[in-house]
Amino acid sequence: MGKRATLKDIAAAAHVTTATVSYVINRTPGQKIAPATRDRILAIARDLNYVPSSAARALRSKRSRTIGVVAKKNLAVPRFNQTIRGIQSVLEDLDMSLLLCTNRRRRDGLCDYLGAFYEGRVDGVRPRRGRAGRP
Image: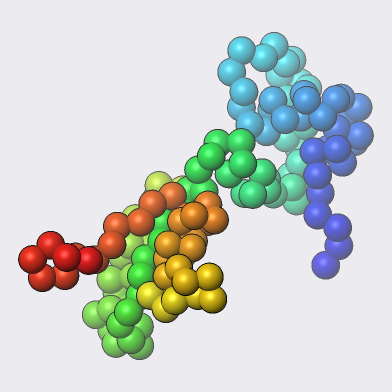
């Protein structure tokens, strides 16, 4: 597998600045870019198999667009597997991702799913409630 295409690669091929490429790729409103230039940039991005960096987008937006699910059940059991597939299907329709987490404790003392939240790999955590509202 070769080097991953970057905005710089697209800019060089299109003879424009990286800022212009960024405006086109990210559909930044209020930028006056000629339709021919926009089309050329998008065609070059396709030709180079450009894939936006989800890490860069997460840094900029402060959102990972990923939902964590704590899987404490055996996913080989059809009903649990179907539940996860259903969640994944809905998230795909929303252009979001699914991260399966565990409830095990890490070396730093945090549960896996809390670590994923604090590290910014998921956008939120809802702990399972026990009896009488206790976690």
